[in-house]
Length: 193
Image (tube, rainbow, N blue to C red; front, top):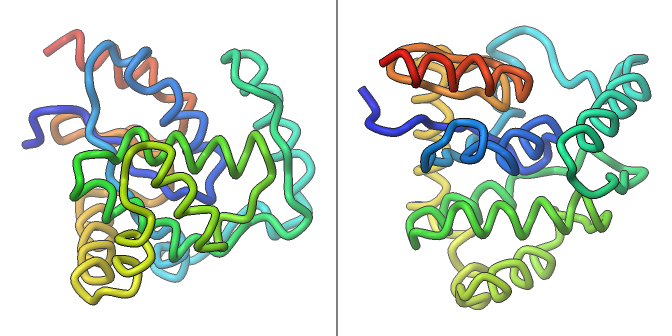
């Protein structure tokens, strides 16, 4: 069983952004952030992103409403959102190995959802790395390394095996809470242990 709660996230997911940005505050303790590739889960679960359906605008409106309620900056949506997050999640995997998953995810999320930057652009990721004290040149190389590719694949597979079917998902012991609106339920579960 994990010692800390885990938040599974994908850097292209606005709901994961909402959870990661407030997770430690709501849960009342440090969390482990686990980058996964949501796109690799879509075929397994049998459906894709709401962002590619007629529910797109309603979903965006809901995310904006929640961000306001949580005190987060207004969202800036790129016209081509959702972004291809493969390189970004590989970079987050590398940042996790450097002990910097939280600050790196925060820096990328701010660029993506508060500034409208393209997280498929390696230079955007390199800037985020540099901002949090990581070597941008190492990041550029890391996203191409097989070790990092394999680690992201293994994390995604491990999340699926643990019962994760989307992001954000919060794992507390052996329970999975799906959705940023489940953070409070996850916090209650933690408090009852």
